[in-house]
Figure 1 (tube, rainbow, N blue to C red):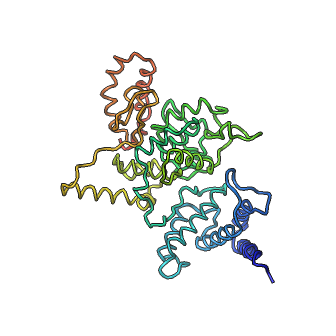
Figure 2 (cartoon, helix red, strand yellow):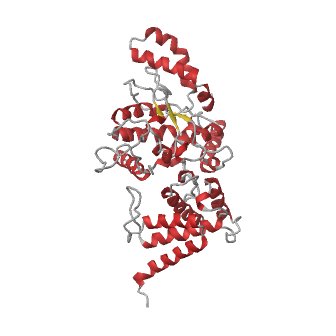
Figure 3 (tube, rainbow, N blue to C red):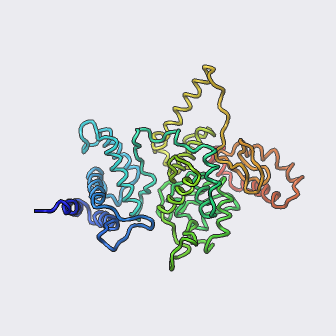
Length: 424
């Protein structure tokens, strides 16, 4: 008779055999390597740095759910795309997939498939799926709840708790660019151009197919500049976000890539110290950025999709950020009924004090002292800087300020496509 303590392991081993029988050799090898990395009974391979092995019941759930997902798509997992997987998950939920039961699967069931698929692709190094582009249903059937967005006070509280320049660069990049955590992770030193206020997405490293080209650094510019001063190597081909000197183990390459798990932990630690109780993970900052762009700056969906790296045909934005259009309709109805005044623009991205030491008003989209632009739409900042440029050049006593003003002018002249991307 099999002891009860042995049954979970036997069930798990049987599921592994199913994977070998049903999947292509490439898929089976990738899935089994992933499972082995989290098996507490094995010494190699190991989980990614900062992660840990899992209970055998969790490994069985990984294996079972990946088998189900593999049965439901008509292409190998190692060749699937994020859009293909997202369409499959939606069809399973809606009951339109031939493998779905009548009426579809519950949201929690599909969410489990999604979570465990994300876990697999977070470990798997191949292309073309970026795990951060896989849509996941939330438990309350509202993909993003506006009440979960960070307030201006919460953002400032988190900023106040950041002590290390690398952690500040991580925080400001997530907050001001809305990029996926994997995009931030894969940036090289050469991909950060603080003089022009741009970052270049490292598409060659297997990022999502739409994560290419350049994006504005906005308020992350100075944090990136400061971290470059402390970067352990400063070599162009080394990773921009690396292990901190005080955390790096002996023999660890100082220019190596920081695992996404450690980025998540760094952000959560900042939020915990600031007393922010909302879910503060890198993807929450991505949602926050998109919400601010649409709700506070009235940017078009196409512009936001470009900044976030969504394909033009993707419906993820409309589904995930439905709360934005709902809020707009509610606000317009209440304004029309005379129950509220028309909303004044909020500016949750701008700090209270610019890096140059200049105090910023609550509605600041740019610093008039040094020219740093914070607002994602940049329209008001551009117009106000246009009006003030000549006057400031005449009165500037600080050469750093004068150079900053000249840089803003040069950026506009040399990068008109950037302004076009921002909808200007």
